[in-house]
Image (cartoon, rainbow, N blue to C red; front, side, top):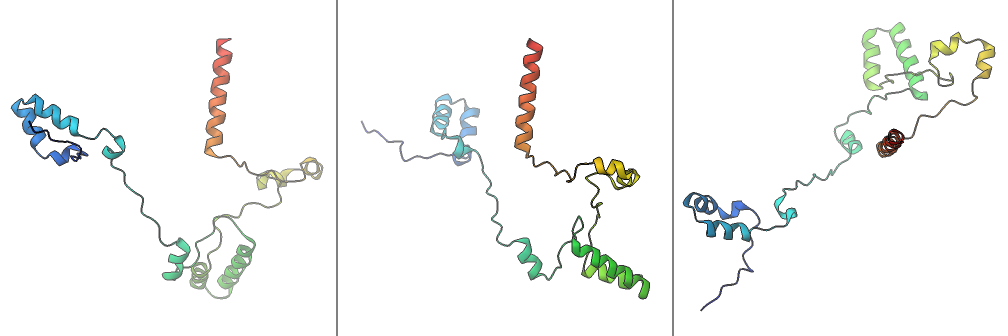
Length: 169
């Protein structure tokens, strides 16, 4: 009797079987169906389609240089934004609105000018304080939180566990 080895048959998914799997189900051939399913690979890494992310070959700086696109408009003010805004205001008063728009497109200014030297308070609130109340404020402005989503998640889990322990007690 001649034996046949099945080591060289590599079926990754059912697409390689074509319509044979369907015909085995329709024809009621349980043995053929079971054999075909047994030949399929059980490794999930082979069965799950994985899309690779395309490798970015050029950075945004390189693309801006290639297409000659100016720098993007900053969100908050920088020291140079104040001088640009002054130039635009001077162009508006000396020339026209068209020259102001041209300057805005050539050298965009910031979208937001947050208040400076207000100890982290809104500008209108800070200016309504008396000199004595301003002296009582902390000397340095508070820094924004440097939290990551992972830190927040861990803090939420810890808080949940703590409340569960308090409810159980």
